[in-house]
Image 1: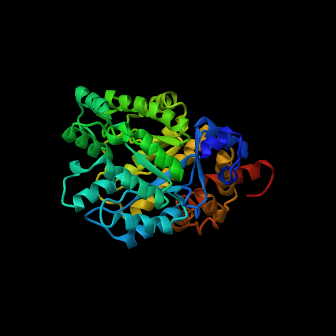
Image 2: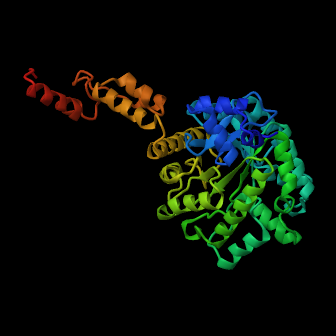
Length: 433
């Protein structure tokens, strides 16, 4: 039996117990959420070296870090260093989005090196494999796609993004309305182009039951991808995006009915005023399935700073009910991320996730900020470093004021508002300054 099937029978699995301990909640809460489809517990049956991870309603907002090679840069040593940084900087999951080099070997090395849950987008490898044979991507067959998905499962991949909602009908909706940027998802674009050239339906939609069979076999969580997500604000929340979302809601139900856990991926570029409505719409249409959002990015004009743009959108999305944030690095839209880009993207996403957890009233979230406030009041510098999301950076930036005898930093020194306030309180109680 799968996790969903066991949860529906009232069984508390090992994965449920471990996840509950990590979340600080009763195992029964996780079990009930898995049974209802509002929580997923992620761990491939053959990936026992990692701890399972729970994502969904009422749990800490999780973050994902994307790594992976391209044809221009395919350095496995670099990717394994990115894995180390992901773990060190506090990512919850890693997605290997490699499109260059020996993709299967790279994936296997990442799975072996990472203590975190691993996700992939199998159609990238399927397309790269066809190109390596000297053929065009559109010559890829359904067998090519499912062969790679099976390989991902056998290699221990815990969740996969599959663009099952990119169908002839949903793509027609995009074309009928018209967009500035069209389809910006790589997987969505590959699928749409394949359908157009072959005159056939998306195999991952047409043979969805076959996909579910593989997912059941390995206990892979399906992340139903937003292949028609908007790539700019002007294209947000259009008919194509909504048509795909409606299909994903239907496919999510079919997955649950077959005992397969499922998440839904959400839009990329969305105006600030549309973020909450997008989250609420997804939750309603997809019956509360965990929502995995890229960003979202509420402006298009900040290349080089899109980790900040994404953090703004992610905090709002998380507060509105998104469960899982995909980080965006400063390199988004510009280049393959460097090691430092990966680190900055993770920290920005963690800030957004923590802000969201405070807004959600998650137990313990606001208490951490209160502890920071107490440390600042007491000029407990080490306490401030330890309470921060990025202690290494906090410690590196810290400069205590010698003129104020360490009761203040070099920004204010003797003019430190906290110190002056303490002096005023001492005078009011009769103490000497």
